[in-house]
Image (cartoon, rainbow, N blue to C red):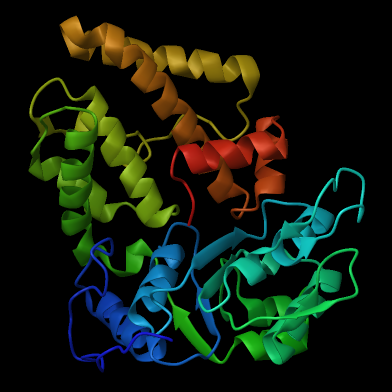
Length: 352
């Protein structure tokens, strides 16, 4: 039986889950909608640029809902090819295709009595969109290669970093699926539209990475905070998180100063990173290692490995942003296998 949930306080300005940071009017409106829609079983569509926290809102809706004790299953629709994504969502039976050596439970079935979060739903193909529409309307499907119909009680929360209405009008997304998803829409504001939250976010990420990397950088120079407040943040909160982490790693003292920030944040012409691959990535890592070694003194040996990871993480985050968060496109630009990119995104916590 679903657990009883007390009525939400829709006027509560505080984030509905601790992971959400920000008290700006734009975010308070998001919090109010999150609490309100959590009490229903209606489908929810989350719209926002890459890095705005769509998955965090999806988790908050699930946790606050009567389904909160059930499973929360996330599927990145942009990470897999159509045939693999169909199997991931609906499961398959033995012999359904080459490599199907046994039966497999799909994500919709695994999310029974809970919530399935379909991230990057704009990247799905028309064929798969037909099957998603059926699940939303009829709550039933068949595993790949099977004829037995499976019924599920699963709530759907979908997210897109593109305007689905525009995608529908352009013929890239089914109109009937759009209207079925668009029961309740929550727009997540980009960071540039809630700049008053930047000091709170910087303080939060400083605390996180000071503890994670065993560093002590509790202070932010006024000039550095001013630069952070003025930057446009095309990668939103995720980009800010990466830059604060980088500064914590490289800081020689206990203060985040402007020289620890990337050139682009300071209004200077940045180094071109979008098309670096293979050996070029090694050269970029060398530049940052030299900076870190000179700043770290006796801790340089341990810091070397940390910086290499940070450089790769920063590069992947930037290329993902430039590729509209579509992993197939980003993997091609980076010159790596899509499955490798997917694993690294999970490893570095770069998911939405």
